[in-house]
Length: 325
Image (cartoon, rainbow, N blue to C red; front, side, top):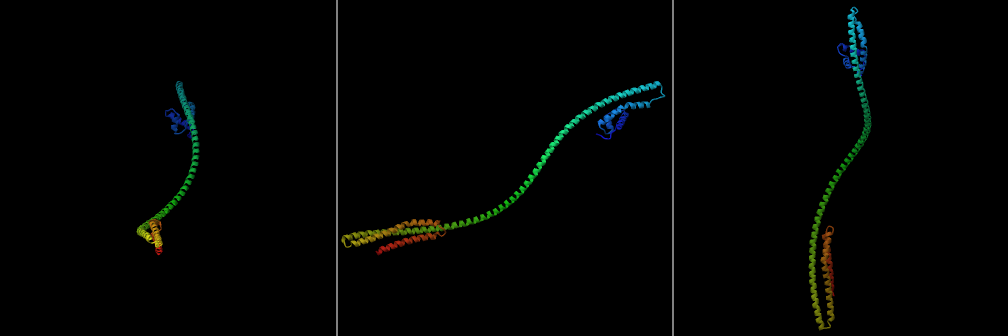
């Protein structure tokens, strides 16, 4: 609402508008003054219209011509009365129009007030909702800040754990590389040792085969000797039988010789049986040599030599005993 507008300002503006040949209205007065609310201008304009008749009478009295003739004065008075009536009628119409416009303005203003009241209520509701939302948002923001702080702490802890894990991974990689180098060295050494052992085993197998061949040759020689002794025994027995027929005196001697030859044959048969088992024993020694620790050649050679020496010594003792008897 405009401030500072007075009744005198409105009346003066209305007079100036009338002086300009125009009808004073609320909008023209507001435009002439440059300010003023419609309600205030309407109220002061009504008082201007109410005082218009009195001002005109004063003006009529001031404009009376006492020296004029009666007819002229009467005519002038009649014209003035008609002018006043016409002015009052116009003023009344204008006043009614202004009142109708004022009523419409008031109705519109009331509608606007009601609309403003509804909007204000809606705005208050929105403000309340906004306030609640703000409180909820503030609570959520505080919770989010707490969660952010917590997550930042967890992120820092995870970063430390990641750095520690990376350091452990680097150390593990160094350890793995060192282990791979040691494993490669051990594999190389094991490969060299396997190659050396394979060479030893091959040489041992070759020598063992040679020993088996010699043992077989000795077995064949002993078999030949046994065959010869068996033939000799047969011939001796035949001779003994012929001699038995010739002389009973030589029977006991022939029987004793036969027993001696029989003992020799049994000794040679035992030697032959032992020599027959020799290849199997040599093969067993060879298999044991393959599974033995380093230096299987000496062990195989020692076992073969010991077995051969034992058997040859035993056979020699039995043969010597038989020959002595």
